[in-house]
Length: 561
Image (cartoon, rainbow, N blue to C red; front, side, top):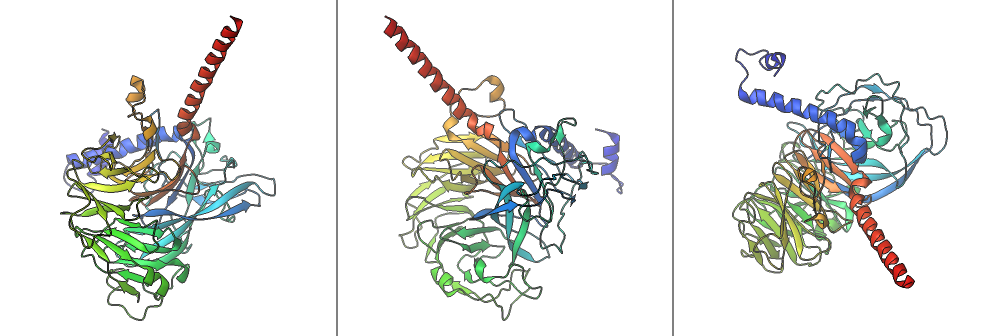
């Protein structure tokens, strides 16, 4: 290790660097080295990657179902000072990974002299939150402009860039507090690739004057929240209705249509409803896809609560506060809202309940997982049960952090655990998992099935990775070289975050597009290269063509005889 690095650690102190400090520096150097590898390979791993530096880290993200088509009708000339906290990696067959913090100050001028429509975009919306200390927290809606299908992002001219894209420095935030959350973002596509430098060039592809610029990410709505936003989820039957959780036991119900885009400075958090029944905070939360207003939540008090908030939705609560009992950011005070109590409480777990999910086919079944290492399947028709319909003790070797029922196969569900694995289960035989997916190097916190393919599952971990698994490849033959990169079912590893991935979400309106957020303030929207997930389909098609050709040849030989 260079002597200058050690002296940098001990600068301003009289003691020599200890093993922990040296380890931290080595890890940072490794991250920088990995990023340079990713930088050269990004055009081959992704169709696009958008990196946005949030003002504060978000612990939650979820795509909203509404979209709007946009058209850019101006010259693509832009002059933007862009600083991005960009880090994005991919791991496919070549197992190329990397991550970094990039700070580039670039004036990018895209000289497209042609007038008229230069690119088509679709505006998508994303539900995110803030996690701050000593500051006001917000539930937020961000707009994300993605390219329409078959739209080619115009290449940018990076010859005028005065930034140095090779400098890697940590940037906590690039948001201008006076810009209503419109901070800088970076979009990396194959068209940004610099063949001479062998790297991705440019840190901004959007024009601040064009609302339809592909890659633009902007905060469109902020609602004051009581404490940080642990989790936020919209109701499937009405995406304006959102449930959120913070550091308090209560669950808050919001009607986004009853709140202004940006709150007044002297206003206080004013949810339409408050669900009171838990004794501690939590993260797990899921709306019923079958019955409007039905919500199930998990808590650190070892219980699962079932709520019916139809009355809250119909009454609308009030978005105007008359009094508070504490500071808005302290989590003790809020505006008026309709209070509701749980209609059922499930109390079989013996430790923190980390996550819950609602069965996609059976309207009465919910699942929960806990730090007691158990999986429990409940029937909501039973009144205050302490015994689950199905219980799997010691389902994993460590805490079980997440559960997700398959949207198509009624018997299949998955769980993610602190033992670094994802397990697949068949409800007809819960004695042991039918498959264990190994590929993460740290705790698995979140899992979610793809909305387009029943065999595709994604998982996020403390190892800074989002993994995409293709169950149809389980057991596929591998060369020894491919086996070194992971099991055949591990389709892709996205490693664009320098710290734990807090949450991610599949985009139901844009196939294979995922948004992920991490504790380093970074929001990334990415879509892996089509060649990666289409490779197997092409191989299968080729095999079928060969079989058809052989059969045709055999028929010809028979005919000749």
